[in-house]
Image 1 (tube, rainbow, N blue to C red):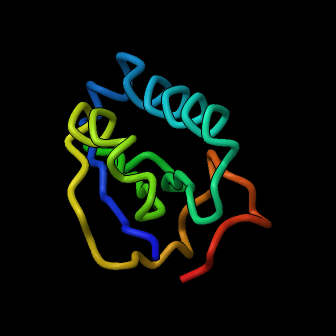
Image 2 (image 1 turned 45 degrees about the vertical axis):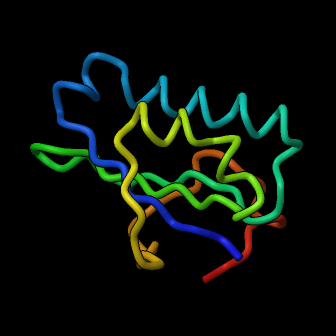
Image 3 (image 1 turned 135 degrees about the vertical axis):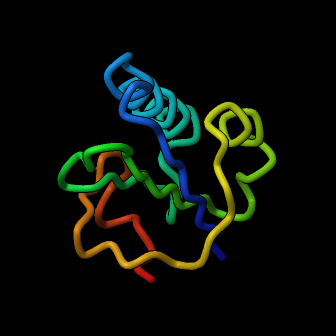
Length: 99
């Protein structure tokens, strides 16, 4: 199973580089974990005027390992999102378990 998390960053946080740091942090963890099936980070195709919404899919067996990252970015569990307006930033498309 995969648990989905929503991460919402303010425009100021994005402009200060927090979005890039999130992407780098997830990419580093994917490297360490050899990108487990189902692990992926998605972001909106466009920056909303006030916020950036990202969705992170985490395989259940890796959730404990990623707990600090989830807390650092204020990730909130959520239902499977509609990703039609989102792009895959981190993760392998062929290893992603599609909702």
